[in-house]
Length: 175
Image 1 (spheres, rainbow, N blue to C red):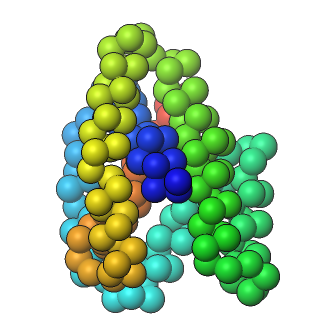
Image 2: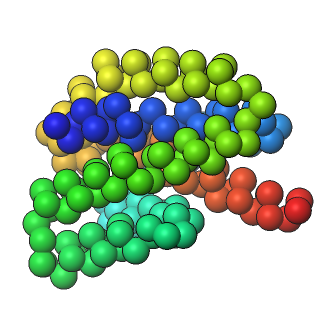
């Protein structure tokens, strides 16, 4: 079930970066981040990679003003040994599927001038994700996220976070 939540809701929300980059004229910067970051992360050692992933995730989640405590609470319970990895994964998947991703979509669709075009892009990306993502998720679980493909996928996730941070700073300085 969690594979399908990730495939149907969470993974396709990365398309919002393309939409926002088009709206903010930052497509070049987004492309650079998505090109360079994954190749940087696949060459990191295991400890530095995990630290980068967790640190960037916390940085990203802090922007969800009313719900940012949820992923921190899940992580705290996991790292203190209160909950298992499987239970923590379940909780973070629910958070990403039903709180974090809808907030991304709301932020993007609220400000866009091309709502129908962007909805069709999101729909297409969701269909592609439903077909491809379960296989990638299985691959990552089989290899414990430590092979180059798994790290590359993680690098794409971190590119999403880095681009959103770049946009936040850019929009903050331009207002």
